[in-house]
Length: 576
Image (cartoon, rainbow, N blue to C red; front, side):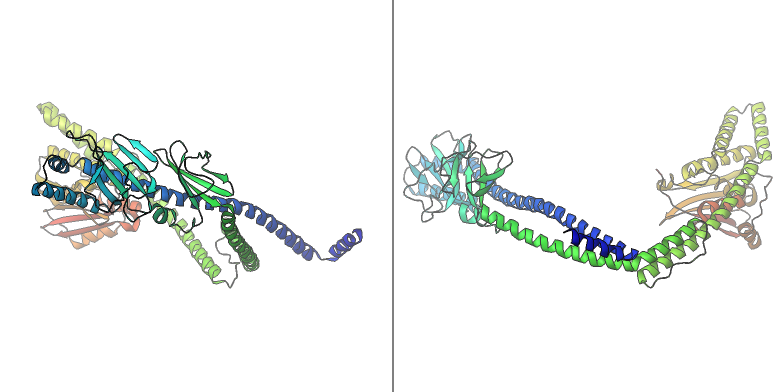
């Protein structure tokens, strides 16, 4: 043994470093796979056991539901008959009428009505009414055995004036199948010994207990609420014997695995599966899972080897190129590979890198423009002449005693200044912007007593949409000072088309030339007017460019001496 060990050590020492690493890697892989297979086998054994138990329990649950549905159907039909006033009245006539044609006619009417009820419920087999005092059954829909008894087999459930029996041999003539039955007493004031007898139409053995392929070799027993056997297919568990199960609902018993399914009413059904059949199912699943596991391990080894050979180097180079980009080197290209997927990935990565460079430059430019715009806004938001003229108007209104107009002027000025001093860079919404515009119009009407009409059409579903501050006031200010003379009409219209808000400010004043429109739309110089608040159309254009970029647009349509329409197209953002 020592000699063999020395030969192995000597052989290992002669191997190169690369061969040693490969050997250690192969040995580690083999040990890891062996351990994995062992763990997998243990896990699969538990999984298969749980799967078989789940399958058996599911099958047993279906049988239990079928039995309960059968009993419920019988109960439903019994209720239909018991609560039928028509049957009750006709039965009274039949019992208290002497033998005559009328009595036969009543008998046929009752039988036809009972047949209609049972025919509409195919789960019902034999049905009849039983007169206990006379030991006579009437209105039966099938032939009845001579040894008919009202109470057959064990009591499955007991209720008020109604009991469920079974399983027991059918009382229908020429049939020896196992059925369930219900006996219900009719609650009528003219007799106290009339009962409804109903049997199920299903063969308990052939239609319910032997229909599933998974449990073909199973044997079944039914227990009442005291764990007494009321139906048995196993010789070791005769009728009226006791079967004490387990809270787990499964276990072993005399060479069988048993599984129990309890009902809400106390009785239960138990399936007995031979241990040989159970182990056969387990072995079949185990062999199948073992083949799958071996195939999976074999495929995993091949795929791992291919991935190690074909992907390691490209991934390493790709990682190096990403690292270079992280160090602000956006131009180095070190990856070379012939794998189509990697070629596509690398090309997309380099396209993304190019876009990142462009976005960085674009963000730098936008930040510069934003800073310029904010400074410009601070400088030019309020024209000092506008403020002085407004306060001067307030002084004359106070001296002349026009308190209402003074109050309205100061209130509008206060609201306008409060709105104007909102935080920079924070969007307002369309409702607040419209209110600020209205306050500005109120100020202008009080100051100049202009005789012009203002029309505002805005749908409610866009009022909460966020927009930049002070993009409407410059439009109406231009209409007042550069459009209208002393009278006219200003119309503000807002529409929502698809995902764009369209704001139009129109007047019927002087209009403007094409050269003036081109200067407003395409010239970037800022010139503060001496009229109004001094925030011009150039501010509107620049703030829209800064906020929405290429997704917003400003348009001007004008004809000299006919009027001007300024149109803003901005993206619709649903507000709260």
